[in-house]
Length: 310
Image (cartoon, rainbow, N blue to C red; front, side, top):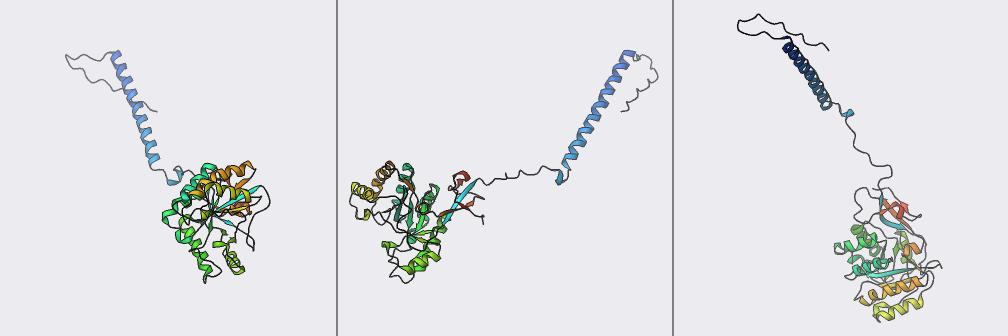
């Protein structure tokens, strides 16, 4: 860097003192510092201007998602199999509970009861009742690990109905519209299903599920009697039928905490009907929001099917 030269002293003026050597040296030092400051300021300005006019390619890139994202998965259904009605599951120390005829004003209390008991069930719903009023309850069922099944649109005897396909398909559409979930199990009202009903259900991806443990809780025989009847009939692989809709269900609701505790005391695991029958659950990654029903990858069963999100 080339330093500024010291200026020559001008001609003396009478009555004015000339600069002393010491003063001249001080002035020179000040000039030198001013020059250095000017160079520093110019360097900083050039650096700032360069960063402001940098090409987009040199700008920092937005953070990319981690390779294992998304970390949560939403249940969207299950994959069933079998061409005959299921009355029970394999003879191992597991049982499944199915609640019919909801959703109803009592259903939310059943969901909370199961959550407190750390148990899961399958809710067979009537399509005509699957409305926005019960959307939160249905999604809470899925969030807690319960399963949803098809119980027809208006609860007719399908062996006498002229439009079985609509009864099943319209219910599937109603469930899907409120939850994004497509069931793979179907329970015919009154247990009435002939070969044509079973085959038509199969064509829609539905396995027909009946039961082998029936406390007839819909007759409202009393809480203790419901409990006694369930436990008297239970055996390995049993499918228990009860009701969360179709009338007042306070007795059934009150009976099940004791039933669940007694089943566990006998060494039974309480699972959903699809799980009891070995049906594979289906999930999709949560690309946006899971709406409160997403689960971590570690919570998925080894048999889970993970599908591409649409």
